Image 1 (cartoon, rainbow, N blue to C red):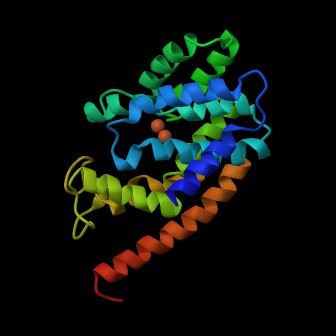
Image 2 (image 1 turned 30 degrees about the vertical axis):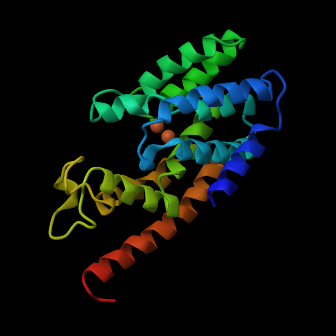
Length: 233
Ligand SMILES: [Fe+2]
Ligand SMILES: [Fe+2]
């Protein structure tokens, strides 16, 4: 399965290259991977590969600029380590945008393309006034959020819970009143406070359609989990 994912990622690096050569894209990819050498499973380089592939899938249908989108997808989470090390104090989208600009300036990429990529990176979290404006930023935002739901989203939620030492499931607590990065930061908590709301936040038509389907699967899974925990199944 892992090799299939990587093969897909490599195939998607290839088409539609004109201004940005495949060689340049591969160089950027190798430089980006450096920022994930100590990453945990819930937010590792494989996440970037999946988001990249989703970006191509959605971006083609939305007629986005695939050159901008590919670079943005590769770089979108390079600031993640800084956020994790500070337990959320540093915003990885803002930090990532700074790091991405430094990285891209070392290559022969025109200023306008760099600006378009940076807009995508700094808005992919969509907090406060950083609203995705361009088509490419909207596609990246949707692709990134889609990787948080569905079967992959469930897997990542449990991985993250394991990373912070949380329980398997929330029992006898109001999950809305529990805190992140604690034993109560379970996959179910993540579903209740965040993941179940994602389908209503999509910014593209294609993203919305994929989100509806992934959401239905995820809801079914957590309903079943609740029944099993209660011993009803
Ligand atoms: Fe991110
Ligand atoms: Fe991401």
